[in-house]
Image (cartoon, rainbow, N blue to C red):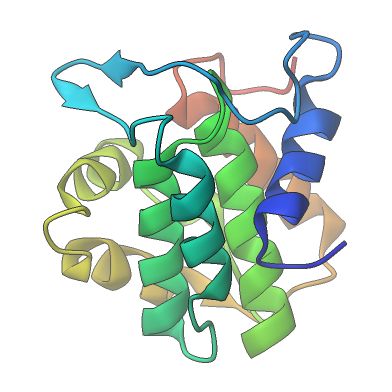
Length: 160
């Protein structure tokens, strides 16, 4: 995998969603919105994703900025959040030797910070930074973090 790239994110999405969607791992070809928020126009999505691929990821602040931009792009019709949180952890692991302990991140605060992040990602950085851990090989923590990721999306707090 090419960590931190759209190719990497597509592979993650495909792995998570191949039993659920025909479009698993495929970049969306139509526009959509969630609530009052419209994600990146698919006419510009390819160039947007190419620009995100090129974003620097040498420091925590840069990695969060890249994560926020990928969320705004929302390259898939569904499953963006789950795939992107794994993608974020892979970048953090590669660049900083850390991952987020998602079990400690409050759902309401996280969703609020993500909603506000296109305007300012400060709230998101302040929320996630205290929960960075160097327990990058702790499988139990990683699996519980994946469960938490499904919980953020409104699924029961357990893997499907």
